[in-house]
Image 1: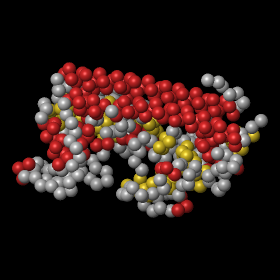
Image 2: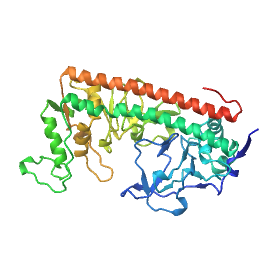
Image 3: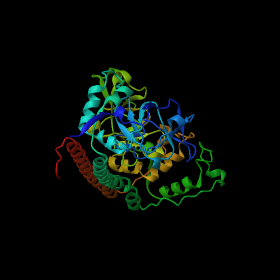
Image 4: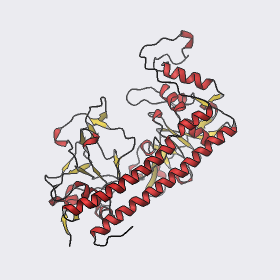
Amino acid sequence: MVSSYPLGELVVREPDYGSGERAIPIQNTDDVKYIRITDFDDDGIVPGNEFATAENIEERYRLVDSDVLFARSGATAGKTFIYSSRIGPSIFAGYCIRFRFDKQRALPAFIYFYTKTSRYQAWVRSIQRPSGQPNINKEEFKSFTVPLPIPSVQEEMVGKMERAQESRQCKLNDADALLSGLDEFLLDRLGLTVPESDNRIAFAIHVNQASNERFDPHFHHPNFCHLMTQIQRKPNKPLGDIIDFSTEQRDPANLPGETFKYIEISGVNRYTGEITVSNIATSEAPSRARMLVREGDIIVSLTRPHHGSIAFIDAKFDNCIASTGFAVIHEYKDITLLTHYLLAVLRSSLSLQQMLQRSSGGNYPAITEGELKRILIPIPAENIQREIVRELLNRRLEASRLREEAAQEWNSAKARFEAQLLGNEVTR
């Protein structure tokens, strides 16, 4: 018979809340990372995540290998994260609670994987106080009980979960590679190449080469000039000649229901263009939650646009609210241009580098809609466009299949983990 213990009895120190310091951009690779609840999801660090650091680093918040963080507030209260020193020196933020477990009794990875079970998820739903901002405090987390087998059995169960996690991640990586690798195919079909990087910090241009509106050195860097020369060798049009941006906005306070579906910039996967929506209480709508998006639109992040947070709005996201940090492509002036071709080009290095060229600002470069309209879009023959679109859609279908397979395998692994603890282990 496996005995159960409250989490509060399995720690080597009192669980503690994180730092309340203000997050600031990382300047150097050796800066201490500031792990916040937005940096991880229920499967770990968000792919492509850009860490911040804290204005002041206090040693008492420094994480050590195998510390487990529990999110205590917000829509994802209860999600967990296990820290690894491979991430680099880190502290954690105040919306998290740190548990440091006694490894002689409870393997941290065993506790972490147990928080992926249906029993833990049911407990999280039951313990949250009904309010606009769900919250679970430290004492409540300490009271949660975990069935604890002997250490050798814990090690065996952790090993199975880690192997299942690795298999799942391989499939997800393959799915991401299918979509992010479209760039090479697109450039090949357009007959274009991205010039090799020119790392000069000093260069000269003729005055007649200078733009009538831009005289800053960043805009005229040789990397950008070489790229523009490549694009201009092919038929092209400025984006503003092809599309119009939507100005349609809606105040979430006027929407029916207590919550609404919100697309924020961090909700767009910069590598794949896939969207994750957040369900937000209308009473707590962010001030930037205003842009109404409709099926067929393309959204383009105006902040750090070169990161590629660009996505297509399909039927399931129709009538969602998006951040005003997006430009929303709604009307198409050029009927010969295929929407999904435009999406592929906008997400390619051809466009992302132009967006970087036309951005301004320091750590968080941004582009205006006016400057975005000036980027050049290659316009190939319709048969080339259709070939690129077919490749995009085929890659999406295969990526979707891989993700579904990965999810099924992971769910099965979690079910076996939970069943084994209940004395009813399932077989493959």
